[in-house]
Amino acid sequence: MAGLTLGNPNTRAATLALGLLIAAFTPFPAHSQVPTQYSVSNDATGSYVAAWSWSVSKNLTTPATLYVNPGSPALFGFEVAISHSVMPQAKQVRVTGNIMVENFGSPAAMLDLADRLLAPLPANCSVIDAFGTPANGIIVPVFFSDFFTYQCDLPDGPAPSATGLNESTGTFTLLEFPGGQETQSALIAFDWNSLGESDACVKVEDSAVGMAVTLASPVLPDSELCVGESGVLRYTAAVSAIPGCVEYSSRTRITAVDTLAAGEAAAKVRVCGKTTATGPGYWQNKNGRAQISQGPVESDGITCKAYTYLAGLAPFQDIAGIAPKSCSNVASWVAGVIRASSTRGNTLVSNLKAQMLSTALGAFHSPALGELDMDLGKVCRDPSACVSPTDPAPNGFGAALAAFGGAAHLKVNDLLAYAASRYLPAPSGMSWYGDAKALQELAKDTFAAVNAEKAFAWVP
Image (spheres, rainbow, N blue to C red):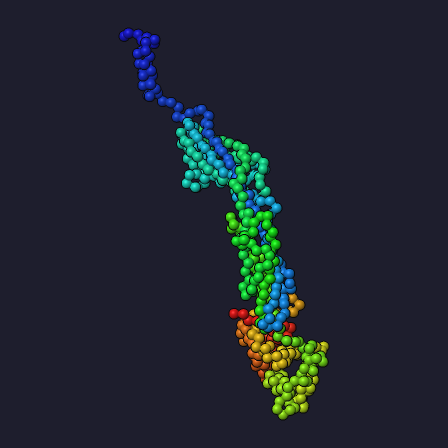
């Protein structure tokens, strides 16, 4: 057999072919003992929008409650202050980027990816794959390369200026020998980019249901207010009064033109149409007694018409004891009833009688008061505290429906008739509201509210 000459090209080729053939049948170790290496790299972009923040407040330049004659207008003045932040704040602050993972020969592994921002804005970020699912438990075979995305959302605040640092970390759990875990990280610095300005203007809308609003100054073009313009608006609103009190709410709403962020401010006002109602104190003093004494008489020229009216209401049946039934004697009887309610040791019944008597006298001398349709869900039960029935509880108001058969509203004349119907004979004498003190007190407070001109009119 001829010897092989290595210098001969044909001979070298034959030798290489033979070596490869032998290698194909020569077993290699099952796993490489070369240390594994995986590649993780990233990029990062910081961005924000410079957005203006707005606020609105609303105040009254006139008293919040006005008493006027029914049919007359009540004029309320409003001042609205709309302001913006001194400087725009950074909003929609976020860092986004891509993470590239490569494996060009290391054993297959299972990958968990994480991303975070370091100081001065520490935060954990969400990493997802191309399908939008979290980048955890990903199988990384040999010869693998893929991109993943991440996003870090940060709170609103001053515009960031310092360079940020982002770190992406891949934890590889080897699925082959030698097993265990390896961690690869990539750290990158990034700057911040402003994506522009937003909410430099707000839309201004004012509403006041039931009120005739007259804008004064300034008039806003397209009802918009922008940075650099005066945010103080003043206007008046008029309301026509009806007997009793009615509450109105005037609202100003601002809406940012870009993000549609909204704010609202409201001011409540009350217009009370005078009813000429008066409390027990008036009917006991000389002016009230004079008004009763000078009242009209029946055709017999002696009997006071106030006597006839009061005698028709059961709680006042003891008026029948006066003689003669003149108006001056009626005035004296009224003063005695009221005096008894204010003396030491008086009872709830005597207080109810005095308040109802005052309401009855008011309705007798002023028919318009008797026609006042009262909202029994808004009864002023504490005159020192009740200003607005829509204030947060406790606000001095309460519902008195239970004392008047569950009715949501009744005219004053009907209140008097119902309370009188609850004055009935009992084994021990007359019983009012079945001696239920809670109902007696509700009725007393209802008549007291009428007498104090704090009765709210029923508004469907």
